[in-house]
Image 1: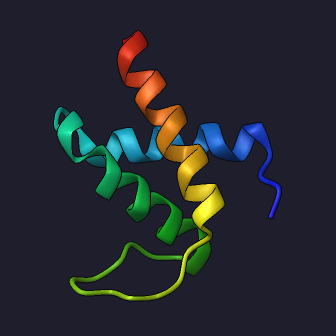
Image 2 (image 1 turned 60 degrees about the horizontal axis):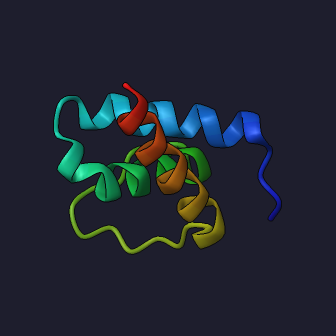
Length: 70
């Protein structure tokens, strides 16, 4: 899947929203945002549904950059 920059930015902002002030939780929150995008809802505890790993990595990289520039 080739993700658009708009989608990656949207999901990165969502992951930051989920994380709040807990930047150390950004990996988990990026996974949650991508899960929500793909499956239509936030994951429940021990959720093992597949997500797009390439999209997750793009969102994670972008989210970390957004945190640094805040």
